[in-house]
Amino acid sequence: MHFKNKEISLIGLTVALIVVIGFLFYYLSYIFPVPGSKMVSMSPFLAFMYALPVYKINKRGIFFILSLIFAIIMSFISIIMGIAILSAGLLTELTSYLFYYLPKRRKTIITTAFFPSFSFISFLVSSQYLIGINMISNNSLIILTILLIITYMLGISGSYLSVNIINRYS
Image (cartoon, rainbow, N blue to C red; front, side, top):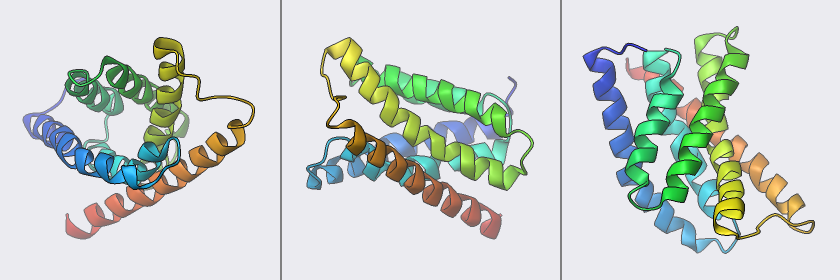
């Protein structure tokens, strides 16, 4: 992967904005007393922010690089969070290869919406296996599936908004 200076600046600025503005969304999510509500409330924002560099740079490996830098920064807060972010980025990168045949706009909207969904899944898995908190049970599986679908739909709306703003102003 070879990035130009302008692209590296865009990646750095995007990750910085995700961290700073993400804390606001994270603390606002305490309003909803539903498990996983933090990822659901942050999904449009994450998809919006990821869609900016993915659409503008349009190179393979961009999800991995964004997630790697984001994971390194967030690992200072929690190593579990860093692992979840990095695994979500890897899964999103792999998923983006499935949609290589789509036009750039549609591919960006579809694939960036997977990042919040994979973050939700990787958070559940990492918290279960690394910390020992079992959030997945027979009773909660339906609720978690509904939350995952809502997370993806909100991710679609965030990435759609981001791509439309980029097309309008650049």
